[in-house]
Length: 132
Picture 1 (cartoon, rainbow, N blue to C red):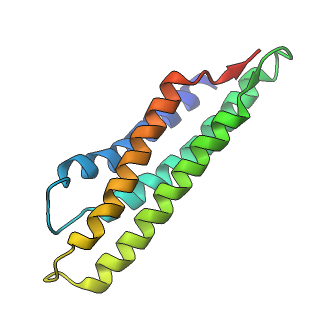
Picture 2: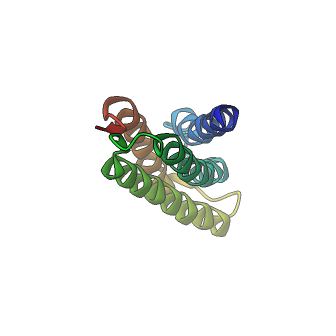
């Protein structure tokens, strides 16, 4: 089961990179935002995050004194859902604008997605995931 968890975790990190990478690259850009990457990254984060939660529950099922911190998982899931929704809205608006239009009005949506992704990293690292 450990190789499955490791592969899922690697894909989860790649999904994170697909959100934070375009955010950092396009901070000062006026057009051409990579919302398709952010949307794909948000989708990957949701799917692999839920898979990792299931795998963690299976690992901890043998020890009745330990359990996952479901509050942490809920917070991270809500943040990722907001990232996904923001990216979807921005992606659809970007498609309606066309290639020649200035897309500067979409920049705040990119900032929201990037800031929430970085917040998710901070929560993942600093908030313990197991409760005893």
